[in-house]
Structure formats: C-alpha cells, structure tokens
Image (cartoon, rainbow, N blue to C red; front, side, top):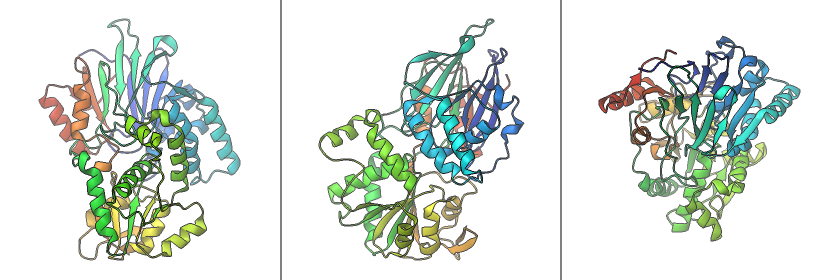
Length: 450
C-alpha cells in the first residue's frame, strides 16, 4: 500500500452524521482544513483547541457546502486565530453570510463581535469555478466537482506532491446528492484518486423510488388536509425548503393539491435563502430553467405566504387548518417549528412529515422512534409533549445519496481508489457500506495513519 504523504486528523464527523471537520497536515508545514461544522446537538466535545496545530497555522479552509453542520464552527476558528484563505464555490460564498448570521444569532457573543467575525469571513472567503484546476503553494493543486447536494455543494480533489512516489491524490466527497433532484444538476463524475474520503449517511439503506416522490408527497398532503388539520414539515432553510416549494408548485399545477390550500414558509432564513436560489439560476438544472422561461417560477405559486416577523408567527401557531407549514429546524433542534409542535403535536387531526435525516439525540429522531407507541411523548423546550399527530417520513427527499448512489459514485472513480475512508455516518451505516465495498474488491480503512 502506498504510504500517505500527510497526516489526516478527524476533528468532527468521522463517526457521526454532523459536525464535519477534517485537517490535513503536510511535512512542508502546510495545513488544510476541510469543513468546520457544528454537530446537530451543538456538542463541542471535539474542541478546536485540541487541534494538532494552532488555528493561526492553518493555511486554507475548504468548504464543501454551506449547511451549518459543515460551517457552524468557522466563527470559533476565526476567534482562535485563523487568518488563512476560505475556499469554496461561488454559490457557497454567497450563502455563507446568511447561514452564519443565523447561526451567530444563537450565540452569546456581543453584536460587535458578531459583526467583526462576519466581516473577517467576508474578507477571507473566495469563490471558485467547478471543474477547473487551481494551484496552492508548494505544488498542491485542487479541483472542485459539483456534488449535487445543495446549491453550491462540491466534492474536492487534492493532489499533493510526493518526491518518493509521485503525486498523491485525495477526494473529499463532502455530502453527495442524488440524481434527478429538483432544481440542481446531477453530481459530476470524479477523477481518479489514491484515497477517497467518503460520506456514508445512508450507507445502510436506499431511498424510495425518487421518480415516485412527488406522487407520494401529493398522496400524503391530500389525505392529511382532508380532515382540516395542519401539515407540519420541518425543513432545513438551505436546500430542503426550496425543493419542497418546487414539488408543491408541481402538485398544485397538476391539481393533486387544491390550489386554495395555503402554504406558509415560517422561516426568515428560508425566505432569504430562497431569494438567493432565485437569483442564481445559472446553477439550476435545465428543467427548472425551462419552467422559469415559460413563466412558471418554481418557488412561487398561489396562496404561498411568507411569515417574516414574530407576531405573524404567533398568529400562525393558533390559526386553524387546513394548511401546510414549512419551518426550521429540520431535526427540531430549534427554530420556529418547535413552537408549532409544542401547541399542535398532541392533536390527532394534524400531521408531521419528516423529509430529511434525523440524527441520534435530536427531537426529530425521538419522535420517529416513539410514534405509534402508547403514551408516546417528546421533550420540546423542556416540556413533555404527547405525540398524537400522525407521523410520516419520506427519505426520498433527503439531499444525501443513498446506498446505491454512494456505490455508484465510488464505481465512477476511474481505476478504483487505492483506499477508501468512510466518514459522516452512524456505525450501522458505515459498517454496511464497508462490507459492500469490500465484497466488490475495494480497500476500506478502519482508521487512518499518515
């Protein structure tokens, strides 16, 4: 096995689905961090103070995409002394500020400190094109491929010089998306690599047939709204809300969902991100651009309402159904959806629809695991709330590639990666994917040694 010409340190996300943060240190003293994310439960056990190098010694921070579990600890890194370049795609750079501004709103930092951190990030961040090769210092080169996960998402291919064995290439998959996703093009095919750092979120399962996803959503909404209740959809502001708007627009156009039913976006951040999606049409897929050209904006339709201030949010909590309410957070770890469910989860006329992964230890996971059980309940804001609403889960809306998609990505690497290291997955998912990969002749590392 070819020796690795660097050390790789997992500072988060090695064995969990959130909190991604990885550090490469090279013999020539170059240090490169890939993502700097916050875990879903905001547990900072893997503190940045425990890094093998000082934050001030990190030359580059690469960002695969702008979800908080991949960028949420950037303010901590800045405060610890990081002063290098932040490298990402143009779309991710556009999304960094609103996403981090929202994250900082939950911080106990002063407004002056928050502003200072945001200004510094804006000064350090640079946007780069997809599928072009760029040089870093000391002969390191990189290229960003479209990961198809959310707007601006990428996988990163590095090539490191090695005088003994020749150039050594590494791909960080970041979070990989699916094919046939609304709005976004399919993921790019990767180049050859010696080491593949691969996410494994859904390494143990496949999504339901995505071609039936719109039909399945329509069936759930049609049935749920028929009893005059509310349908609650917890969704991440970045990516998921825009996909849901796209699909509901299709369903209303087809008449599957009555155009008269109101849809509320109760997420100020979601509204801001949707505005960014709307103006960056060059990153949409052909289908979405064709709709826009025909005058059918995929994020706008009859009886769609923006809930922008807290007063309107409070009125919406008490408003009777039928209606659809989309709000954050996707795993119910905070956000306006929690307040909605405190009041409405114990009403059997209502429905709660999960359209994304629910990490261990989150209220969303608790609800999924306890729904249907006698006296089922969940703790929300310190209160025990009975789970009486009907609970649905549609993994077909996940922005993550499923097992088949992950295997397809690996198989598309020319000449087979020399080694694969699985990250970003719970144990069962990683082990299931590891077995399948090894059964087809791939070398999968349990640990990494430089």
